Amino acid sequence: MQPESPYRYTHMLGACQVGKAWAAVDGQGQFATVAVLDGVAASDQRWREAFGSAANALAQASGGHQYAAADLSAAHPWVAYRAEQGHAPQRLFQSLGMDYQPVPDLPVSAPPSSAPPVSGVPQQVSGPPKSVSGVPELVDHMPQLPWAMHTNPVSGQPVSASPQPVSGVPTSPAASQTPTTVPANDPALPSPAPYDPFAATGRRIAPVRREPKKPSWVWPVAALVLALVAGTVGFFVGSAGGDDEASPSPSASASLAPYEATQFSINKTKFDGNLSSLAEPWLAEAGGCAVDTEVGGPGLPADEKRHVFCRYGGTSLHFALYPSKAEKDAARAYRQQLNLAGGALAPGLREATRTTGGVTGAAGSYIEYAFKGADNRTVCGVWWDRDDVDGAFYVETLCEAGIAGNWDAMRDLWRRHS
Image 1 (tube, rainbow, N blue to C red):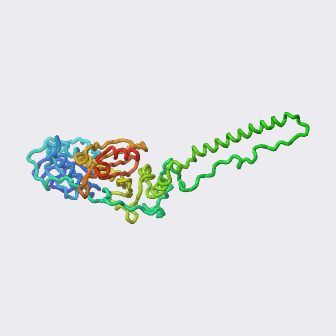
Image 2: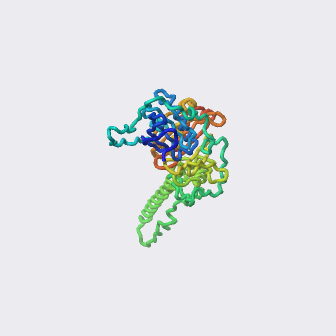
Image 3: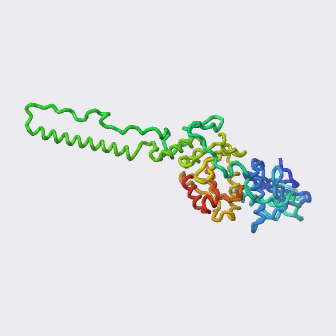
């Protein structure tokens, strides 16, 4: 079923994760191309605003595309372009970070007397249609949703509190991934007793029975042998003690100070499934983590499956798990739009890019962005999502009060925890 609009859609020109481009004809017989937001994105207010902002930015950019009509309040928001605007819908979706795929042209067999088929980019035959709803407005501030930067800290849960279930069937913490530097058992338990070679083998030196008629040189030789044996045993005892000190058992509790080991133990109960691998580099340092299922925890946005909020120093740290790749792509595209519009708010912000995590080496998408918070102060953020999971984390702080406008501080934070 085609979306409602004043245009009659003839065929689809292309599609991406959040919308489609159509060849169309208006009521006066003018050809046009129309970009339509549909699917989950059409019901997401954040995405609807980003779609309108992108259309407006594309219209104002040098070498951009002026649209002929638009209705951003429709159930499926749309933006129409005159025929000579070429691949404007494609550029619109691509500016939002979407993987736009054109529909291959199909061979058309029709008698010469038939009307010319509408394919490729339609040609304009008369003036542009009137706009259905004015120029889309740029977003002045981010919607006040749970995933945005929290202005007040989220109180942590008591250490003794049992983790709340985060899915239909609770997942055992043992199922989540555990860093190689942290033991699976409780780091508070004492280490095994040092190895004692004498306890396991008993006496090493058998008593020497005196023979009444031995020559006088026997005793000096026996003393020498006794000294050599004792020295050898001492060497092995010393070696065993040294190895136990320098190379502890695969238990990695020795690599974490007691406070960090405790934080790790508390935090790992908050994550399961795909979020475990994303959160792993943060577990020993983040604090006050709360799941959306807990009392006082963060709200769960409609496009997310799980949300965990933590604190790291003066920053807000969010872990979001999405039902599928489509929702994750839409959330990433929203940050990409903030990246495009955030350069003037936070100088030094870099373009979104593909890279690998600083700790895990996993491939993913890295985005720096900025926006005006509810109190009109600028917030700086970094988004990171890995290709191998349907989840992402993003860390946000006030650009001035949090990092003094220094983006290198945010990049370093990401590098050490990605």
